[in-house]
Image (cartoon, rainbow, N blue to C red; front, side, top):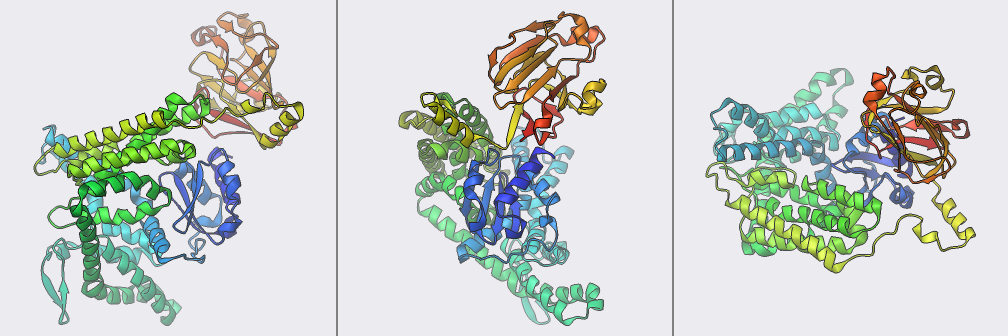
Length: 629
């Protein structure tokens, strides 16, 4: 069983099991559940799970923050449960208030293709930058081909929205897509800004027709869900395969073009004008509010309510512009600035590593690990980041920075702030300055405000009595022991090792590694209990009682220590990650010995199982074996 499958099954159990799930989707870092009863979920246990960053209950959703590998966990969840079945995700739970329902609808519709849209937006921005710097011309074949893929998703956006909206509203996805195709058909787009007659009823086509539109198709698919259900009830089963689609087309096509389309366009215009009115009143205040509160909105899932506004701004006739996205960039990078300050300030090794990695991910617009794993738990760094985001957002609002392509809010968004027609880079420069201001303020303020550093696990028990120590150890005891990889290299299944003693499992369960670096490290805290004078094999007994044998190469005992440098001695107490042995890979190979190194748990019989993490390559220090008690 892979680690991602373990996580998926554990999370599913802790949210109350498959029977408690109405639906589940995922975004960049979260599994977003709609549960029948959130009270059945073991929220405290989920928050304590080492593979779960945080649980957020907001917008009618039960959100389990996993991290950037959430898509892999989601795939395992779908593959090993009934949640992937067409009829398994029935939305029968409590709906909540109208606001929560809208947030849920928007997130469910946009989440599935948000990554594709973000990638296309970044590509479109870089193409504009390439033209601005005279690297490409708009007539070149490279530009034409890449622009087609970058712009296509936005031009035909209603088709993607139709597919995901149909899934949300439980109606036929292919009928919905056909309806969207009609909206963006060349014969319709050619009539942009004109009026035609349908059986004497006027049909108004907007100035930009329906390409890149959002609200009309969502409303149309919502109505389609009721129309389709009606015809399924009145049309005999043996005729439904043809007659239901035909009836839906005959009803929905005129209704969409005559009523739903114009109404959706009007609603979109009102929404866009409402935001632009607020922005026009004071860009500085708008920037400060959005930059300061954006991560708060993200925490509660409220940020989905702003996605349609940004897209509506960009879909306006004549080439739309959006002023919201630039104001959000400082909020994202400010979290990275605060996390970087935590990296320099904390003495907790685990927190230090998390702070550095999350600061890097924030550059690419992924802030959940930063917020939930670093800044929010420490409180003051989160406040510092919000202040930095507010100041940076206010500066960008003051500078009237505009965005021309949709994408994930990150540094990769910057080329999208260059207008394709004028190639004016002043907006990009102002955005860089505003983002730098936010980053620096968050970084410096974190040092000024300080925070209560998290102690290393177990460090607080050293002065307590033996009974207290025992209780603490028992309370922290997990149902598995996780070993880190002692080597960097390629994973090899134990049964593939060219030594019958190891491959048969006679010495215990485990795995092998073909090392690419000649250094062997301790996979866990413990004691050196076996150490051959030749240095080719080391055995340790971990603090948890697992006996781990690491055998460097095959038949390397014949080298009599040549090419091996032993850095420990038998009986030494060692810490996880300590360097134990250095060895010369090329010398071992030259002597004709395979370098593949088995790592086995020799007392495997004392445990339920020894599981690998389904890896192909591994770095020293990564989790790679789980010993199940």
